[in-house]
Length: 93
Image: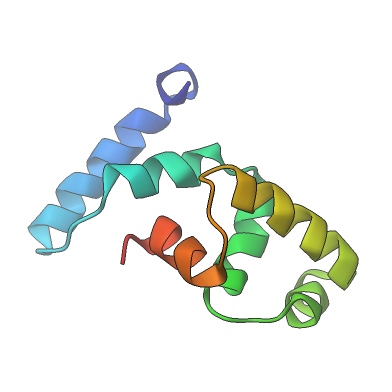
């Protein structure tokens, strides 16, 4: 699917730039990020940074229950069970 919407070229460019900066990125991380919807990406990043559901909801003008719903969907995609694993899946650390 990434090739269908043209994201593979952007991912490859990002990998080249990271190599030039002596950084690296895990292909699994890129795959996971590509699988997220835009709303899930908005919620996943602050969750991985340790923000609570009410804090994320306040920033995104969502209810904590809506944040919880989206986190549930996010956690089932790579079969992760914690925010620490979410951070690893997002940031490859």
